[in-house]
Amino acid sequence: MGYLKVALRGISWMAGLRAVTRGLAVIKLAILARILLPSQFGIYGIATLVLGFLEMATETGINIFLIQEKEKINKYVDSAWVISIVRGTLISILIIISVPFITRFFSVPSASYILYLTSLIPIIRGFINPAAISFQKNLEFNKQFYYDSTIFFFEALLAVALGVVTKSENSLILAMIFAAVLEVALSFIVFNPKPKFKLKTPLVKRIIERGKWITGAGVFNYLFQNIDDILVGKLLGTGPLGIYQQAYKISTLPVSEVGEIFNKVTFPIYATIEGDKARLKKVFIKTLLVILALVIPFGLVVFYFPFTIVSLVLGENWLPAVPVLQVLAIFGVLKAIFNSFFALLLGIGRQEIVTFATLASTLVMVTITYPLIQIFGILGAAFAAIISTLVAFPILIYYLWKFLR
Image 1: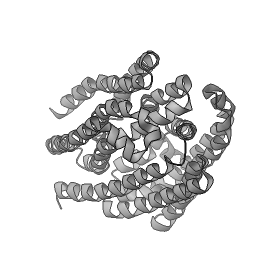
Image 2: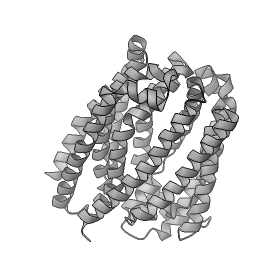
Image 3: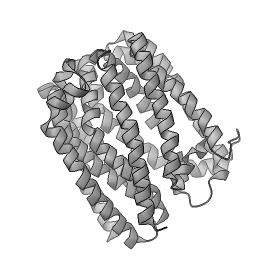
């Protein structure tokens, strides 16, 4: 089967997966937004900010490495598993240590308990079988659909059930904990080989050497995507933070999901045809045009009907999110295009370019977000996201033109 057919088949399966998971996410959000207050979502948001930062700061790039690797991944599974367990344990310890500093920084002492709960997630995830990347590497997207949707459905259902019973933001973290346990169990049931606790130094060095740029890109990407959240929470409080984060999710949901679907499918294809520049160029241009054709209409809907969307999804208590949603609709379109460039660069093993482009956006984001929030409130954070994204485009276009010409 040609790669075009593989891509189309993969896109259809991943589109189905995203439709299912994001549909469940919207239903979960619509229910919990009518049970929990914006400030409670803000406290949950602080916990996910901390977890996300530490996961990015310690990212080893194992999954990227295994997909890029032309050989069979069996010989790497044991070492990759040990690295993953050590990394997860380290993140958990760092979260526990940082709790007093985080609660003081955001002036939210009540966030201590949810942060301690959050510390359980990375150590559990560390035990996931690295061979779980096999479906994506082997372009078996139909199997990926059933595997991921099972985990996400379990998490969404549990979060709603616990939210209804407890009316606490802790329900969201508890659902993530139990979903992580389920994912570990499934990864050992479904995938082979089963990892053993053995470390091979040469393989570890190779993984780390190839993954160092992913670590850098991950840290910068985290800062780029979350510095606005951090400053909104610090300067304006948990209520505005909850409003901003949910507006961000809704505004970028349709457009970024389209981009994620294509990137999930095209990344392993790019890695497979890396040596054929003519084919790479053809696939990339076609993919980019299709993404544009899909995300622009979605972005226009969010931009012109923000009041209706907020009222239907979140309810009347969340109407302050309307103007933010409208501005972030533009950001969502830019983000989908931005990520399509990243998929190609990662596919051809140019992680360093991804790192440089993300660093440029991050530096601008760090520089302009604070003054814009001071002037425009949460709208300023949305403006900063758009400006920072635009900064990286010349870098990406230049390197891709240089590679594909």
